[in-house]
Structures are given as C-alpha cells and as structure tokens.
Amino acid sequence: MSFSNDPVSIVASAGSRPTASQSVSGALGAATAQRAARSTAEYRALDAAHHIHPFSDMGALNRVGSRVITRAEGVYLWDSDGHKIIDGMAGLWCVNVGYARKELAEVAYRQMLELPFYNTFFKTTHPPVIELSALLAEVTPPGFNHFFYCNSGSEGNDTVLRVVWQYWRVKGQASKKYVISRNNGYHGSTIAGATLGGMDYMHEQMPSKVEHIVHIDQPYWYGNGGDLSPEAFSRQCAQQLEAKILELGAENVAAFIGEPFQGAGGVIFPAATYWPEIERICRKYDILLVADEVIGGFGRTGEWFAHQYFDFKPDLITMAKGLTSGYVPMGAVGIQDHVAQAIVENGEFNHGLTYSGHPVAAAVAVANLRLLRDGGIVDRVKNDVGPYFQQSLRDALATSPIVGDISGAGLVAGIQLAQSKGDAHGVGRQRFANGGDVGTICRDFCFGSDLIMRATGDRMLLSPPLVVTRAEIDELVSKAARAIDLTAKKIGVQG
Ligand code: PMP
Image (cartoon, rainbow, N blue to C red; front, side, top):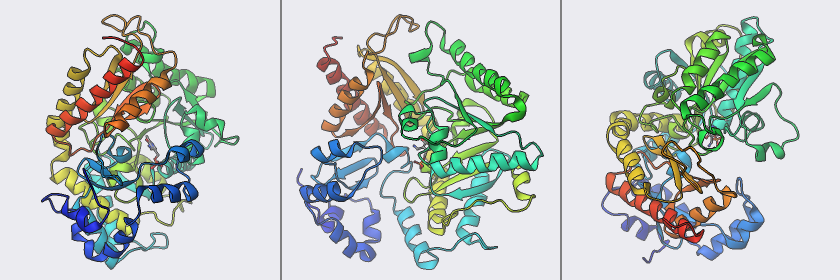
C-alpha cells in the first residue's frame, strides 16, 4: 500500500468515519504538516540523535532504527512507511475507547480554549475536575467517594504510599509503615513505584530504594506451582502474606498492594482462591488493601475494575491509562470513605503535583468515561467481544505444540509458551530453558506481520482496544496464531 505523509491524503484515506484529524484539522493543520513532512530515514536519524526511549537499549535500537507511528484509528496504527498494523496492546494497555475518537479531541480542544490550565492547590477548583470526581464516584464501587489526581500510574502509587502512611499516622498508629508487595509485580518507574514493583532488573539499577517496602512471591502457577493445583498454589502464595505480616509484626504493617492480575509481569491471573485469602488476611491484621488498577481498570476484564472480577474489596485503587484512554496523561487514586475521612478531616495533606486534576485531562476523562459507560463499551466486553476473544484464542491455539496455557478474561490474555504442556492438569509441564528467546522470536514474527503483540519473557500478551469488533478479533487471533506457529517451526518444535 502506498501512503503519503501529507496530512490531506492521510485524512482522505481514513474512510468515511469522521476522525479527530478532520474535526480539528483547521487548528492543527500547520503543525501536523510540519510533523509529517519527513521521510522514515530522516525521522529515524533525528530520533537516534536526540531521543532516549523508555526501557530500551538505545545502542541496539539506534543500529536498526525505530518504527515511526504516524497515525491511528480504531484498533489500527499506520507507520511512516504506510504499513497498517493491528494494535493488540491498545497502545500500552491504555487506549480503551480506540484511536481517533472525535469526541475526546473536541472536548480537549474546547477545554484548551476555555481554561487550558489552572491549579487546584490554593483553595481553588474548576468544573472539569469537579465533574470527573462526581463521575468517578458513580463508576467506582460503593464507598469510593474521594479521588486524588496525578499524571501517571507511577505517581498514583507514590500517592498511595503518602495516603497510607498519613492514614496510620492520623489514627495514632505511626509504627504501621511497611507496605508489602510482590515479586514480578509492576507498579511504575518512579523510585517509589519501582521499589513497590518486584522487577529485579529495575532494582539492579537502583542503589537506593524507598524504605519499608518488602515483597512476597507472585502467584505464578505455571512457573512456580510445581505439582500443586493452581488453587492450592495460589492459596499458598496468599498465605505468604500472613507469614510476612507475622515476621514484621502487624503493628508495623500498613498495607498490601497488588495488581488484581499482573499485567507487565505477563498477564498472570491467580486462581480464584488467591484474593479471598489476601482479603481475609488484610482484614484479620488490620492492613489496608490496595488494588493497582492501572491496567485492570475501566473495563479490561469486562468489569469496570479487575478487583470486581476477582470479587474483593480494596481500600484504595490506583488508576491511570484507561481513565483517559491514553489521550492525555492522567492518574488518580480512589480512596474508600473510612480512609478518606482520616485524610480529609485532619489538617493539611502535604502532597500535590502542578497538574493534579489538570482541566484538559479531567475534561477528556469525563468524555472518555461517558463513552465507556453510555456507549455500552464495558458491557460489550463482558457479554460479547470479551468471551468471543477468549474462546477464539483458545480454539486457535489448542493444537499449538508450544502453547502451555492461556490466562485472561475480557480483552486481556497471557499466552504461556512452553517446551512441553505436561498432562491434562499440567503436571510435568516444562518451560523453555531460555524463555526470553522464544518470546523475542515470536514478537519478531508479529512485527513482520503487522501485529502488535507484546512478549514478556516466554509469555505473549494481548490487550486490544475495548472497541475491537469480532472481525478484528478474528484478524488479531489468526495473526497471533500464525506468529506462534512460525515460532514453533523456527525453534524446531513439531505439532
Ligand atoms: N501500575 C501498573 C499495574 C502498571 O501496569 C503501570 C504501567 N504499565 C503503572 C502502575 C505505571 O504507570 P505509568 O507508566 O503511567 O507511570
């Protein structure tokens, strides 16, 4: 397919659906024209010269050059060479309502003209943040009526620590300082977020960490469950929380934080025995329970929040990504009434960010939440496209010799690549000796077939925009199955 970077032909090629670029093209035309005017080679050269990418080996990346994404619509991306790519990762788990939603672009544009910025520090507020807070109180579970805003999931988890520590201080139990998290959890990349996270490779580059954060094991049955059933193994992992609390002394433990399902760690879904046991232990020892919903929130599992899928009740929830569908940066922390009371009624809370409750981000979040709710997008994930996606994936990969297990719900899935599946219960299953290699091989095949599917070690991850249609799911699943098939052939495993 030939493709021009001229913005006029970009709009013309987008089909009949009105896109954001058409609606605001008058205002943005000059800037867009300048941005899109370079060749792929020019973009790559400038990118290599001046841009340091997150989580990247820049030397290696610059030798091959980055893929330059120039526009997107629905579940598709286009690169600067004109390739149309199906996005199986919703950007970075965030573009829940899909790309090029005119409603969101127009809201941002209008808000920028009306009130592009004002702070919320000095006895001041503004309509967008008020509307958003009231709407979040409606879409979150009962008891969540207070929200603190930031710009990202990482800052959300920094905020969680501040709220948790202040809560116990106000309650006269300042010794409750320890926060327990999990190995291979991901909670962000600020110093606090990365300390909370249990990613060894991040800890290696951090000689200093935030104090009073400790980890227990992740409920990763495929890798660590041995001959135990998933249910027994998950229960055992949860019971490590009790052991850790007793080791530290309950009077010293403030909170437990976990992603309801681990996202960046590989879309690892614990068995149904896990969260009820974690919740029981938190209540028994008077420990706050924090659900990091940065990936799981806003419809990903078919429920509004992933903790509702697992049926537990957290005291705090961290939100970002799907809050604005990634159109503008925003994070938030939802706080249960009994915790919020301690923060709201007890003098100054010494925490804030210039852009806490940014009016443009808040206005976009309101429009985005309305699309998710009033447009029936979350319901559709639960009752239609979610089950269809899960079933299609399992049908397509049932006979693959290198797929050991698939976990997921709604529109998120983790595909475990494995040397051997073991028996019907997975007993005798065997991972690849060098798991990261097989994931990288598979990801390269995806790249070559214009599919975005992420690899985390030996697990392949999918998390498409929630507006994906059945036909697009068919395309996504068949491309994923083909990439996995090519991987099996390349490493010499026969079906
Ligand atoms: N928590 C979880 C569960 C995440 O997946 C992420 C990011 N992937 C974060 C926190 C950090 O969010 P951000 O990158 O917006 O700081």
